[in-house]
Picture 1 (cartoon, rainbow, N blue to C red):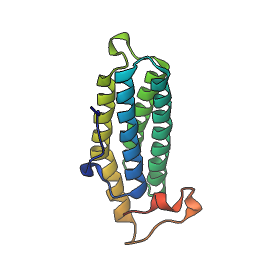
Picture 2: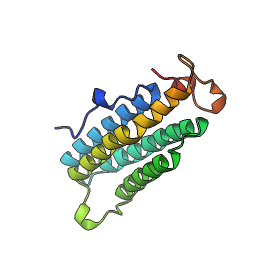
Picture 3: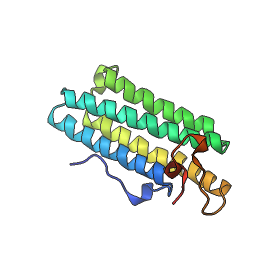
Length: 153
């Protein structure tokens, strides 16, 4: 049984952000399966590394949008990113408390965190960006992100 899956109610209607979210949900599902099969295995560590790297890339893309558009809630949103990255890193390094061993409960908590973050923070960010953009206008590559990452659906 998967811990989570991509659902349409998690769509922000920003191509790159939605693709990143789908990837993060898929990685969490892989982590869940791996923990069920072999909780202390090297595969769990590799998946945590992949999750951490994917989360960093996603957070950087969102934070670039926040900077480009002078997003007023950037500080609170960025704090959320930092908390997530710290949690994943602690799990990877084994720095979680003994009573919170790496388990399917932790993957469930991460999935819940991601869903909440999308609904509470990312939808607001994308709506702000949409309100700042002219209809059907995409930014060019001069801001440092690939063209497709800045275009809204």
